[in-house]
Image 1: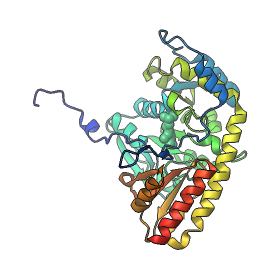
Image 2: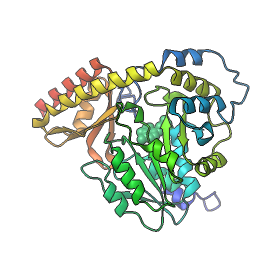
Image 3: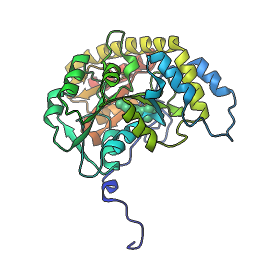
Length: 365
Ligand code: PMP
Protein backbone atom coordinates (compact mmCIF):
# COMPACT_ATOMS: atom_id res chain seq x y z
CA UNK A 1 0.00 0.00 0.00
CA UNK A 2 3.07 2.24 0.03
CA UNK A 3 2.08 3.80 -3.29
CA UNK A 4 -1.60 4.23 -2.45
CA UNK A 5 -2.96 7.70 -1.65
CA UNK A 6 -2.51 8.40 2.04
CA UNK A 7 -5.45 9.62 4.05
CA UNK A 8 -4.61 12.81 5.95
CA UNK A 9 -3.67 12.04 9.55
CA UNK A 10 -6.60 14.13 10.89
CA UNK A 11 -9.11 12.30 8.64
CA UNK A 12 -7.87 8.96 9.96
CA UNK A 13 -8.98 10.03 13.43
CA UNK A 14 -12.61 10.45 12.34
CA UNK A 15 -15.11 7.72 13.16
CA UNK A 16 -17.72 7.80 10.41
CA UNK A 17 -21.14 9.01 11.57
CA UNK A 18 -23.40 6.10 12.53
CA UNK A 19 -27.02 7.00 11.80
CA UNK A 20 -30.03 6.00 13.91
CA UNK A 21 -31.17 2.52 12.93
CA UNK A 22 -34.57 1.28 11.81
CA UNK A 23 -33.81 -2.44 11.99
CA UNK A 24 -33.35 -4.85 14.89
CA UNK A 25 -30.30 -7.11 15.29
CA UNK A 26 -32.27 -9.83 13.46
CA UNK A 27 -32.90 -7.53 10.48
CA UNK A 28 -36.56 -7.00 11.39
CA UNK A 29 -38.00 -3.58 10.44
CA UNK A 30 -38.78 -1.59 13.61
CA UNK A 31 -40.69 1.62 14.33
CA UNK A 32 -37.88 4.16 14.02
CA UNK A 33 -37.63 6.43 17.04
CA UNK A 34 -33.88 6.76 16.69
CA UNK A 35 -33.32 9.78 14.43
CA UNK A 36 -35.54 12.55 15.88
CA UNK A 37 -37.82 12.63 12.86
CA UNK A 38 -41.34 14.10 12.98
CA UNK A 39 -43.92 11.32 13.59
CA UNK A 40 -46.50 13.43 11.72
CA UNK A 41 -44.32 13.48 8.61
CA UNK A 42 -44.30 16.84 6.81
CA UNK A 43 -46.94 19.41 5.93
CA UNK A 44 -49.45 18.11 3.33
CA UNK A 45 -48.58 21.24 1.32
CA UNK A 46 -44.90 20.20 1.27
CA UNK A 47 -45.97 16.72 0.14
CA UNK A 48 -48.05 18.27 -2.63
CA UNK A 49 -45.08 20.43 -3.69
CA UNK A 50 -42.93 17.30 -3.85
CA UNK A 51 -45.52 15.56 -6.02
CA UNK A 52 -45.31 18.28 -8.70
CA UNK A 53 -42.59 17.22 -11.10
CA UNK A 54 -39.54 19.51 -11.12
CA UNK A 55 -37.26 18.91 -14.10
CA UNK A 56 -34.57 16.50 -12.91
CA UNK A 57 -32.49 17.54 -15.93
CA UNK A 58 -32.14 21.11 -14.66
CA UNK A 59 -29.82 22.28 -11.92
CA UNK A 60 -31.59 23.90 -8.98
CA UNK A 61 -31.34 27.62 -8.28
CA UNK A 62 -27.77 27.75 -6.89
CA UNK A 63 -28.71 30.56 -4.53
CA UNK A 64 -32.06 29.12 -3.34
CA UNK A 65 -33.38 32.65 -3.91
CA UNK A 66 -37.09 31.99 -3.34
CA UNK A 67 -36.40 29.81 -0.32
CA UNK A 68 -34.13 32.39 1.30
CA UNK A 69 -36.76 35.06 0.65
CA UNK A 70 -39.40 32.91 2.38
CA UNK A 71 -37.12 32.13 5.35
CA UNK A 72 -36.39 35.86 5.60
CA UNK A 73 -40.10 36.69 5.55
CA UNK A 74 -41.00 34.13 8.24
CA UNK A 75 -38.11 35.01 10.55
CA UNK A 76 -37.70 38.72 9.81
CA UNK A 77 -34.18 38.35 8.40
CA UNK A 78 -32.60 40.00 5.33
CA UNK A 79 -32.35 37.12 2.77
CA UNK A 80 -28.83 38.34 1.92
CA UNK A 81 -27.84 37.24 5.42
CA UNK A 82 -29.10 33.69 4.87
CA UNK A 83 -27.27 30.75 3.30
CA UNK A 84 -28.90 27.38 2.64
CA UNK A 85 -27.18 24.02 2.93
CA UNK A 86 -27.54 20.31 2.28
CA UNK A 87 -29.00 19.87 5.74
CA UNK A 88 -27.58 21.94 8.57
CA UNK A 89 -24.83 19.29 8.74
CA UNK A 90 -23.24 20.88 5.68
CA UNK A 91 -23.39 24.34 7.25
CA UNK A 92 -21.85 23.17 10.54
CA UNK A 93 -18.99 21.63 8.61
CA UNK A 94 -18.56 24.79 6.53
CA UNK A 95 -18.51 26.95 9.66
CA UNK A 96 -15.62 24.92 11.04
CA UNK A 97 -13.82 24.84 7.69
CA UNK A 98 -14.26 28.56 7.09
CA UNK A 99 -12.93 29.66 10.45
CA UNK A 100 -10.65 26.93 11.82
CA UNK A 101 -7.80 24.81 10.51
CA UNK A 102 -4.69 22.91 11.61
CA UNK A 103 -3.37 24.27 14.92
CA UNK A 104 -6.73 25.76 15.88
CA UNK A 105 -9.25 24.47 18.43
CA UNK A 106 -12.97 23.90 17.99
CA UNK A 107 -14.82 23.85 21.31
CA UNK A 108 -18.14 22.31 22.36
CA UNK A 109 -19.70 20.71 25.42
CA UNK A 110 -19.39 17.06 26.34
CA UNK A 111 -22.54 15.16 25.25
CA UNK A 112 -23.31 17.41 22.31
CA UNK A 113 -23.90 16.75 18.63
CA UNK A 114 -21.36 14.27 17.22
CA UNK A 115 -20.98 16.24 13.97
CA UNK A 116 -19.06 18.98 15.86
CA UNK A 117 -16.16 16.62 16.44
CA UNK A 118 -16.26 15.42 12.84
CA UNK A 119 -16.44 19.02 11.57
CA UNK A 120 -13.42 19.98 13.70
CA UNK A 121 -11.32 17.03 12.58
CA UNK A 122 -12.38 17.39 8.94
CA UNK A 123 -10.62 20.73 8.68
CA UNK A 124 -7.59 19.59 10.63
CA UNK A 125 -8.49 21.50 13.80
CA UNK A 126 -8.37 20.00 17.29
CA UNK A 127 -11.75 19.20 18.87
CA UNK A 128 -11.98 20.22 22.53
CA UNK A 129 -14.79 19.04 24.83
CA UNK A 130 -15.76 21.13 27.86
CA UNK A 131 -17.18 19.19 30.83
CA UNK A 132 -20.97 19.09 31.16
CA UNK A 133 -22.99 19.78 34.32
CA UNK A 134 -25.23 16.73 34.89
CA UNK A 135 -25.53 16.26 31.11
CA UNK A 136 -26.32 19.93 30.43
CA UNK A 137 -24.05 22.38 28.65
CA UNK A 138 -22.28 24.57 31.18
CA UNK A 139 -21.34 28.09 30.16
CA UNK A 140 -18.62 28.53 32.80
CA UNK A 141 -17.05 25.27 31.76
CA UNK A 142 -17.09 26.30 28.07
CA UNK A 143 -15.60 29.70 28.89
CA UNK A 144 -12.98 28.02 31.07
CA UNK A 145 -11.92 25.83 28.13
CA UNK A 146 -11.32 28.75 25.75
CA UNK A 147 -7.65 29.20 24.82
CA UNK A 148 -5.89 31.54 22.43
CA UNK A 149 -6.22 28.78 19.82
CA UNK A 150 -10.03 28.55 20.07
CA UNK A 151 -11.56 29.67 16.77
CA UNK A 152 -15.07 28.18 16.79
CA UNK A 153 -17.51 27.28 19.59
CA UNK A 154 -20.46 25.03 18.75
CA UNK A 155 -23.53 25.00 20.95
CA UNK A 156 -26.72 23.07 20.19
CA UNK A 157 -29.75 24.59 21.87
CA UNK A 158 -31.79 22.51 22.64
CA UNK A 159 -28.92 20.08 22.71
CA UNK A 160 -28.69 16.64 21.08
CA UNK A 161 -28.45 13.97 22.55
CA UNK A 162 -29.45 15.38 25.97
CA UNK A 163 -32.40 17.65 25.05
CA UNK A 164 -31.16 20.20 27.58
CA UNK A 165 -31.70 23.90 26.98
CA UNK A 166 -29.79 27.06 27.87
CA UNK A 167 -31.99 30.13 28.37
CA UNK A 168 -31.31 33.44 26.66
CA UNK A 169 -29.32 34.89 29.55
CA UNK A 170 -26.88 32.00 29.45
CA UNK A 171 -26.33 32.24 25.69
CA UNK A 172 -25.74 35.96 26.06
CA UNK A 173 -23.32 35.36 28.94
CA UNK A 174 -21.41 32.82 26.82
CA UNK A 175 -21.22 35.27 23.93
CA UNK A 176 -20.13 38.14 26.16
CA UNK A 177 -17.36 35.99 27.65
CA UNK A 178 -15.89 34.89 24.31
CA UNK A 179 -13.13 36.82 22.55
CA UNK A 180 -14.60 38.81 19.64
CA UNK A 181 -12.60 36.84 17.08
CA UNK A 182 -14.11 33.50 18.11
CA UNK A 183 -17.10 32.32 16.06
CA UNK A 184 -20.06 31.17 18.17
CA UNK A 185 -22.34 28.79 16.26
CA UNK A 186 -25.76 28.42 17.88
CA UNK A 187 -27.26 25.28 16.36
CA UNK A 188 -31.04 25.58 16.67
CA UNK A 189 -31.97 22.31 14.93
CA UNK A 190 -34.69 21.81 17.57
CA UNK A 191 -35.46 25.51 18.08
CA UNK A 192 -39.01 25.25 16.73
CA UNK A 193 -40.00 22.94 19.58
CA UNK A 194 -39.60 25.77 22.09
CA UNK A 195 -42.81 27.36 23.32
CA UNK A 196 -43.49 31.03 22.67
CA UNK A 197 -41.37 33.16 24.97
CA UNK A 198 -38.65 30.53 25.32
CA UNK A 199 -36.49 31.92 22.50
CA UNK A 200 -32.79 31.60 23.35
CA UNK A 201 -32.01 34.88 21.62
CA UNK A 202 -29.62 33.26 19.11
CA UNK A 203 -31.13 35.01 16.09
CA UNK A 204 -31.01 38.39 17.84
CA UNK A 205 -27.35 37.81 18.74
CA UNK A 206 -26.56 36.82 15.15
CA UNK A 207 -28.24 40.00 13.91
CA UNK A 208 -26.36 42.22 16.35
CA UNK A 209 -22.83 40.80 16.36
CA UNK A 210 -20.12 39.91 13.86
CA UNK A 211 -19.23 36.58 15.44
CA UNK A 212 -22.50 34.64 15.82
CA UNK A 213 -23.91 32.19 13.31
CA UNK A 214 -27.27 30.48 13.85
CA UNK A 215 -28.11 27.25 12.03
CA UNK A 216 -31.57 25.77 11.53
CA UNK A 217 -32.95 22.74 9.73
CA UNK A 218 -36.01 21.50 7.87
CA UNK A 219 -35.25 17.95 9.06
CA UNK A 220 -36.95 18.09 12.46
CA UNK A 221 -40.24 19.91 13.02
CA UNK A 222 -40.75 20.48 9.28
CA UNK A 223 -40.47 16.73 8.70
CA UNK A 224 -38.27 17.06 5.60
CA UNK A 225 -35.16 15.16 6.74
CA UNK A 226 -35.04 13.20 3.48
CA UNK A 227 -34.83 16.37 1.39
CA UNK A 228 -31.66 17.59 3.21
CA UNK A 229 -32.24 21.32 3.72
CA UNK A 230 -30.80 23.61 6.37
CA UNK A 231 -30.00 27.30 6.63
CA UNK A 232 -27.70 29.60 8.51
CA UNK A 233 -27.71 33.30 9.24
CA UNK A 234 -25.13 35.72 10.54
CA UNK A 235 -23.13 38.83 9.68
CA UNK A 236 -22.28 39.42 5.97
CA UNK A 237 -18.68 38.19 6.24
CA UNK A 238 -19.82 34.94 7.89
CA UNK A 239 -22.40 34.26 5.19
CA UNK A 240 -19.81 35.23 2.56
CA UNK A 241 -17.36 32.63 3.90
CA UNK A 242 -19.97 29.88 3.80
CA UNK A 243 -21.06 30.86 0.29
CA UNK A 244 -17.46 30.63 -0.95
CA UNK A 245 -17.04 27.04 0.18
CA UNK A 246 -20.50 25.48 -0.08
CA UNK A 247 -21.47 23.19 -2.92
CA UNK A 248 -22.71 25.36 -5.82
CA UNK A 249 -26.05 23.54 -6.17
CA UNK A 250 -26.33 22.28 -2.61
CA UNK A 251 -30.13 22.29 -2.21
CA UNK A 252 -32.18 20.29 -4.70
CA UNK A 253 -35.12 21.61 -6.73
CA UNK A 254 -37.55 19.49 -4.76
CA UNK A 255 -35.96 20.45 -1.45
CA UNK A 256 -36.31 24.16 -2.19
CA UNK A 257 -39.97 23.76 -3.19
CA UNK A 258 -40.88 21.55 -0.24
CA UNK A 259 -39.18 23.85 2.26
CA UNK A 260 -41.06 26.89 0.93
CA UNK A 261 -44.38 25.01 1.19
CA UNK A 262 -43.41 23.88 4.70
CA UNK A 263 -42.67 27.45 5.79
CA UNK A 264 -46.04 28.58 4.44
CA UNK A 265 -47.83 26.02 6.61
CA UNK A 266 -47.03 27.30 10.10
CA UNK A 267 -50.24 25.61 11.36
CA UNK A 268 -48.50 22.26 10.74
CA UNK A 269 -45.46 23.45 12.68
CA UNK A 270 -47.67 24.57 15.58
CA UNK A 271 -49.53 21.23 15.63
CA UNK A 272 -46.25 19.28 15.53
CA UNK A 273 -44.90 21.35 18.44
CA UNK A 274 -48.10 20.96 20.45
CA UNK A 275 -48.31 17.19 20.00
CA UNK A 276 -44.59 16.71 20.63
CA UNK A 277 -44.55 18.78 23.78
CA UNK A 278 -47.64 17.07 25.15
CA UNK A 279 -46.25 13.57 24.49
CA UNK A 280 -42.79 14.57 25.72
CA UNK A 281 -44.24 15.70 29.06
CA UNK A 282 -46.37 12.56 29.37
CA UNK A 283 -43.41 10.29 28.57
CA UNK A 284 -41.13 12.16 31.00
CA UNK A 285 -43.78 11.61 33.71
CA UNK A 286 -43.94 7.90 32.85
CA UNK A 287 -40.15 7.63 33.21
CA UNK A 288 -40.22 9.60 36.48
CA UNK A 289 -42.69 7.02 37.81
CA UNK A 290 -39.99 4.37 37.14
CA UNK A 291 -37.48 6.26 39.29
CA UNK A 292 -37.64 3.49 41.89
CA UNK A 293 -36.13 1.20 39.22
CA UNK A 294 -33.26 3.58 38.55
CA UNK A 295 -34.66 5.16 35.36
CA UNK A 296 -34.07 8.91 35.05
CA UNK A 297 -34.98 11.29 32.24
CA UNK A 298 -32.85 14.35 31.53
CA UNK A 299 -35.24 17.35 31.21
CA UNK A 300 -35.73 17.94 27.47
CA UNK A 301 -37.05 20.74 25.29
CA UNK A 302 -36.55 18.85 22.03
CA UNK A 303 -38.40 16.01 20.27
CA UNK A 304 -36.62 13.26 22.18
CA UNK A 305 -35.84 12.25 25.73
CA UNK A 306 -32.52 10.93 27.04
CA UNK A 307 -33.35 8.19 29.54
CA UNK A 308 -30.58 7.03 31.88
CA UNK A 309 -30.58 3.55 33.36
CA UNK A 310 -28.96 3.73 36.78
CA UNK A 311 -30.59 0.67 38.40
CA UNK A 312 -30.75 -3.04 37.64
CA UNK A 313 -32.17 -2.60 34.14
CA UNK A 314 -29.29 -1.66 31.84
CA UNK A 315 -29.61 0.51 28.74
CA UNK A 316 -28.41 -2.45 26.69
CA UNK A 317 -31.18 -4.68 28.09
CA UNK A 318 -33.78 -1.93 27.64
CA UNK A 319 -32.63 -1.48 24.03
CA UNK A 320 -33.12 -5.21 23.45
CA UNK A 321 -36.57 -5.19 25.13
CA UNK A 322 -37.65 -2.24 22.97
CA UNK A 323 -36.37 -3.95 19.81
CA UNK A 324 -38.27 -7.09 20.82
CA UNK A 325 -41.36 -4.90 21.20
CA UNK A 326 -40.84 -3.41 17.73
CA UNK A 327 -38.97 -0.14 18.46
CA UNK A 328 -35.58 1.20 17.38
CA UNK A 329 -34.17 3.90 19.68
CA UNK A 330 -30.68 5.37 19.94
CA UNK A 331 -27.95 3.89 22.12
CA UNK A 332 -24.78 6.02 22.13
CA UNK A 333 -22.08 4.07 23.98
CA UNK A 334 -19.41 5.64 21.77
CA UNK A 335 -20.44 9.10 22.98
CA UNK A 336 -19.93 8.33 26.65
CA UNK A 337 -23.55 7.26 27.14
CA UNK A 338 -23.46 3.46 27.50
CA UNK A 339 -26.05 3.89 30.28
CA UNK A 340 -28.55 5.96 28.28
CA UNK A 341 -31.07 5.67 25.45
CA UNK A 342 -32.21 8.63 23.40
CA UNK A 343 -35.84 8.04 22.51
CA UNK A 344 -37.53 10.16 19.83
CA UNK A 345 -41.05 11.24 20.75
CA UNK A 346 -43.48 9.34 18.53
CA UNK A 347 -47.26 9.13 18.51
CA UNK A 348 -49.14 8.87 21.78
CA UNK A 349 -49.85 5.16 21.19
CA UNK A 350 -46.15 4.50 20.57
CA UNK A 351 -45.11 6.35 23.73
CA UNK A 352 -47.62 4.38 25.84
CA UNK A 353 -46.28 1.15 24.39
CA UNK A 354 -42.65 2.13 24.99
CA UNK A 355 -43.38 3.13 28.59
CA UNK A 356 -45.14 -0.22 29.13
CA UNK A 357 -42.18 -2.16 27.67
CA UNK A 358 -39.70 -0.28 29.86
CA UNK A 359 -41.86 -0.75 32.97
CA UNK A 360 -42.14 -4.48 32.38
CA UNK A 361 -38.40 -4.83 31.71
CA UNK A 362 -37.53 -2.76 34.81
CA UNK A 363 -39.83 -4.84 37.02
CA UNK A 364 -38.35 -8.08 35.68
CA UNK A 365 -34.70 -6.98 36.03
N1 PMP B 1 -27.81 19.80 14.72
C1 PMP B 1 -28.30 18.97 15.64
C2 PMP B 1 -28.19 19.35 17.07
C3 PMP B 1 -28.91 17.77 15.24
O1 PMP B 1 -29.37 16.92 16.16
C4 PMP B 1 -29.00 17.46 13.87
C5 PMP B 1 -29.66 16.20 13.37
N2 PMP B 1 -29.33 15.04 13.98
C6 PMP B 1 -28.45 18.36 12.96
C7 PMP B 1 -27.87 19.53 13.42
C8 PMP B 1 -28.36 18.10 11.50
O2 PMP B 1 -29.55 17.97 10.87
P1 PMP B 1 -29.68 18.12 9.29
O3 PMP B 1 -28.34 17.94 8.67
O4 PMP B 1 -30.63 17.05 8.93
O5 PMP B 1 -30.19 19.50 9.08
